[in-house]
Length: 193
Image 1 (cartoon, rainbow, N blue to C red):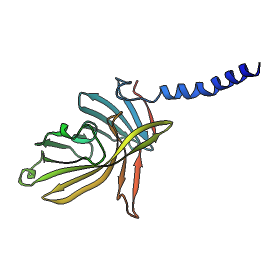
Image 2 (image 1 turned 90 degrees about the vertical axis):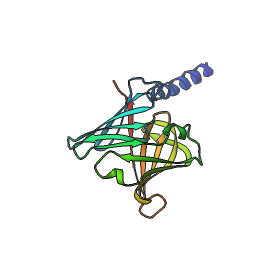
Image 3 (image 1 turned 60 degrees about the vertical axis):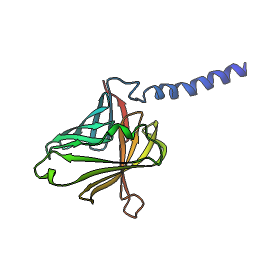
Image 4 (image 1 turned 135 degrees about the horizontal axis):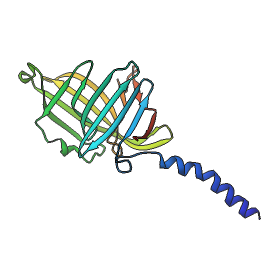
């Protein structure tokens, strides 16, 4: 009698965890996409081949739409603040699949006035692989240093916490390794209905 009791108890304790695990979306399991969110931002992710479409909705009512190669490299963005488009002259697919220690620099041209006169590069450096939690879901992620330069001068630098199973940057780390380090991350995920 006591062994039946323990089996029922074990089953009842495991059932909620199995149900929760089923709600952790990935690109493969949720063909319609998924929504990542944190205070003030909801982002809907959908894929079409190697390109990921992301629609951001902000608490102030602002909206932004972005297209990213493999969910990591921004190729286009439009919204109320500004529009951005980039033409990459390098083969972006050569960086995948990711592995720690991979480094690659891509040449690109921002499609705006006077950008053709300057040399633009995006350097990516995979520094670590780890597990990362979003709500009750856990994903395998890579830290990828994202370094944009114009004429060899740094324009922006941050670290993407990139989840290949989502084709998404789930967090950004600014000033990594300094006293000013700040991480901005999504805190919830759900399938897109």
